[in-house]
Image (cartoon, rainbow over all chains, first blue to last red; front, side, top):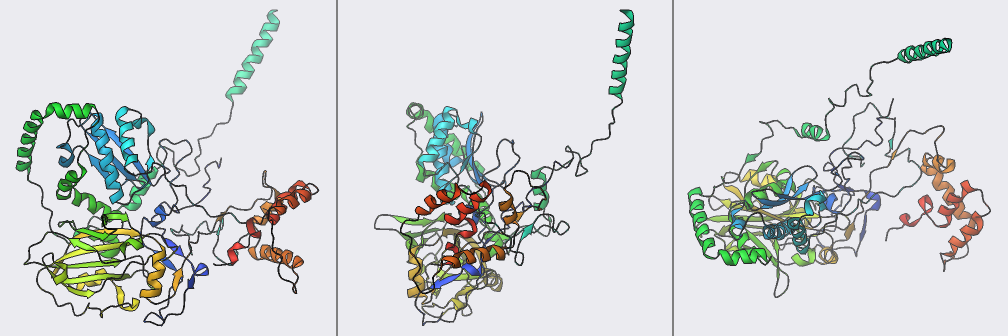
Length: 206
Length: 412
């Protein structure tokens, strides 16, 4: 009855992975310098500490969820539109659950220019303000979440305003390593059933 | 008839009793936990994120947050109601015809005074600024700082919190604006926490001005001149962080002073945490802005002409692939490809090398393939003769796929 077998053991947090570039591929070009940096030794292991770097390069793994799970979890940043009977708001949610950017008619700065807080023009204006804030926060593409929220007239005008604000509504696919046969038994490797008792590592880059 | 009925009845009874005599054991779950008791993904993440409420508490090292006045807000709301009543018809018409466009600049003006500091604090946390620069001590933005670079005669490129700028846009010094009394003293620092080429936990100092009276940067003491950002090729997006500090008094910065026109990367190594710790009685962080930047052709120019050194280049290395346990009888797998998967990579490389050496003529220049597509035709001619299991291998060989691909050996 072993139907629950973990196929791939991966860390839950992709933030633990930083961009690591290893010495084999390290190279320099240019004429020999004569200044102060002539003898500056460069470390062949470069680690980029920026926690958002791999997501922007589309190298970070996306959370996959279960096969028939809805809504899908396969995104970095998700666009959410929320219209209640009292207010209209839009936000961009990171896969960890943090709200990255948000705009709402609850804010006095927006409310004072509107006629109503729950009509179509309010949704449209929230969309354009959200797009502006996204660009300021470095979010240029988002994943469309539950699509049934965007079928109403307000939702559609919200989406249109976000798109006009230069935000792409499609996230890039994850860049995966090319498959090659053969295992380097002398170097770093991940083999099934070999180290079952040793604790799982967060970072599989060596 | 009755006998036949009786026999049928007994048979049926037997069937029923046999059916009842099934062996039933308790449900067995491989993890010994029932699915209802199993933790969800969200619960597991929350458990991993759980921190000590006392030890891991974010300490506010900045100024206290001033809340907006509620009585004033009530007054403004009242005024708004009156003003809306005056132009209600106009607003309604605009809203119904979808021509009501909120003035974005005016929204921004009030937003910067009210909500921006809370949003930007969470964004700075999102970009790991407090983690990497201040060792998990946080502060709110209590002074709104405007930083912009000249783009062309008409436009400027502004620095917000995490927006992306190209290195060619940020080659010259930026303009910095904020509101401050002329009696107060300020310090501004620009650092790169991701760019260090030796120790990845250190930063490079790009710009440092101390003892600024009010908001006049020209009168301040330039401790380190401006160096344009140089995000190294192949390493992705780097953060460039501006931090504005308020001083209690005029400070003697002789320790942190760099020589004039400093281009030495050794001298520019910097740690915000050490800098802040040594002066924490007199310095209070008041504002943070950052932009992200990735490689551009102008970086090469910076390396060659300003830093006077060779330009390094990196490549991302994927983590090693996972291979499940090898099976004796793999289902629906071509056996030769399946066995290749678990072979030592040295054996495979040897095979490729031997194959290459067959055609190699040492006293003649290597043949240049004018029409590489011909390989495909040759493969098709040969594969028709070959058994089916050998065809994929031939295909890989002639089209230079998988381990037959030799393009990785060369670095341009």
